[in-house]
Length: 102
Image (cartoon, rainbow, N blue to C red; front, side, top):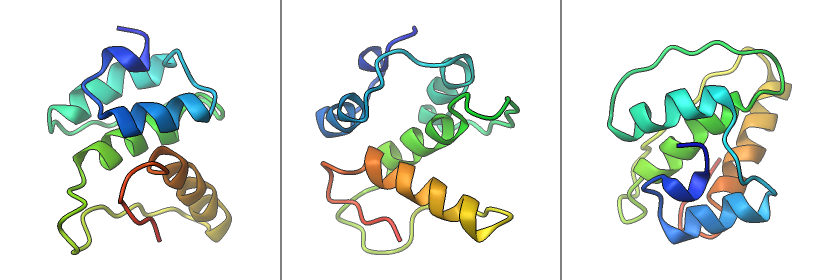
């Protein structure tokens, strides 16, 4: 499985991913996303620019219930700059959903 459209993701999330210009998954995404969608825990490590944010952000968005108004996901980052970068990417994955990213 190497394409996002082969994953069990909603049409809205797939549309967001396509609009962001992504078609093929990176190696870290191919390894992590299916496991995270199954609800498994993953520890992943990869170089800068290899799609790590997508590897955890896409499954996080997919697992969120937009009808539940409580906090359902939390990402902790070591710097404000990285937190802002991560939030921007996750907003992109959630663009066509009813999910709010803060």
